[in-house]
Image (cartoon, rainbow, N blue to C red; front, side, top):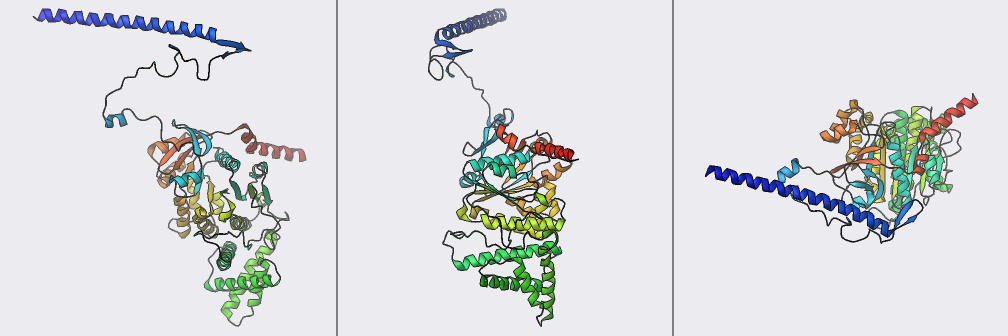
Length: 505
């Protein structure tokens, strides 16, 4: 019985073996026949035009048997498994996708295809909840090219661009190429920006109702008082006393009345005149505070700040222009106080012009953000303006080198450190380019990165960034066109500058 069973099993194995050999021979014969049919079909159905054969059938190929058209000839066989095994032993090779409803940024290197991004549409879809982005990246990693390509493509799609303070002058070529206007501010440049300008009046308030004269006057006064307090904080490097805040507020109202009597816009010299007059007050506390505030603001009308913010605005802000920027590169080498004052005034002036719901959707770029957050007054103004971004249709982009730049705002536990952390929390979109190993731990802790994301940041190539928005992360290669490459090439500017210096020598 055992011998008979064993012999029968051998016969069955031999029959299976012969059947498999026959299937392989038939499959090989079938494949060769398909190739012959394809060659014969190509010879009969193509016409030679130049060096390339042109098919004579319709788009998609000739639909006939054995033409390898479509997936009809493929026979798939499923693999039975559990959901747990499928999630671990067979992980998905493509991540989530934002879809094609946006501007093309580049390629999703995790298999998601084209990476498209439009903050206004993503906010409308509920993917992001805030209208701000922080861009981290070391020098030479491609973060500036990403910011510029994103801005250029937004403008081409009908949005507008404003660069609050272009400290290196790198955006001037970009803005000019987009048909925008550049305002140059610096010593002996002959351009004045009045930080006390009322700004652009919106037709509606935050609730969508018509804006009344009383509400508009209150908004303008609040904005003017805020920039005056900011300037005093920068110049004195301390908080204002109650008496100083009081006399500054009174001087602003007096200066506004004096300007209205002359049918002009109030300027800082008007406020200084009001403070000088208050020095004769019988109240010694008011007189002393007025004297200190007058001497402090005199700094705005003398020295390296003279002629920039001490009169009516001479530059024209074209609200309908596709792009605008304030070029402050002429300040290189100026004192730290002067640089901070210029950043505060130019930023406040730009925000006064663009914070209106009638101006359309606008991208506002803050270059070299580490310089903005190092001043408490400037940082507080930025935090407040970011809170209103959604109401005015603005998307803010703050550019930093690394996450540790936020620590420049102040010591751990300080008010400035808390404001800097609020900027990070309000930024629902974070893009991180390659980071040094020394900064990875802080980056991981502050941004709550996974082990995979942390490992990824060590080896990201140039132009590749880790995008984090909503609850998803993407590894994106920013693709640039040939026109953009030539426009964004900052190395060319460096070489030209060096050649010019050698020629002069």
